[in-house]
Length: 266
Image (cartoon, rainbow, N blue to C red):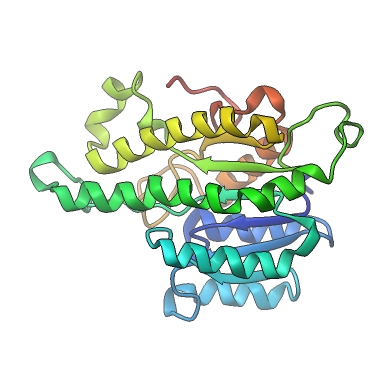
């Protein structure tokens, strides 16, 4: 299966789990003109070994970028590095996937402190906020290169210029009564709810630039964070994510949906 995504794409938290699988499938399923910027905290470390191997399997298509989304200086350096490589093309797709969850499961209230709340918020909310802010000129550059005729009159798409914020169904305020007992996780839940509001704000703010912004729940995925009990394989989740991203348009900007395209209540 090919996906109708193209141009320059950046994925955060790409050394493992959903992020690594996103880079893998984007490299395999996009055209020759597509280029993936895969970011992680320690590109030379042991935890990025799989990502480095993947980049050697797709020479010239994957560029690994050092990026710690909790560090503003690191974000600035990553933006400069990407800007130097991209040139006139701009950034077509920013996927804010990097996230942390503290304290370790089951993360009851009794084990959760201020430091946990602040660290998770900084990575899961402030990081995507700064990335969108700093990459905005590159996202605008990509958006300005397309005319309405390029996308059959639909001004927004992931092929043109978009931000995808990876959220979670347990951030839904409405669904909290049915999901809380299985995953109390105060810092993670509240940070992702804030990420949803960030998505909504960015969608309104960036609409004038024809930049699409959508929050997507990838499903309960079997990863280090999702745990072994999760019913969904990363490969299947990402297949769905890329299919959904390929279909997004004006009406989806500012929305909260899942990996199968279903709407999730706020």
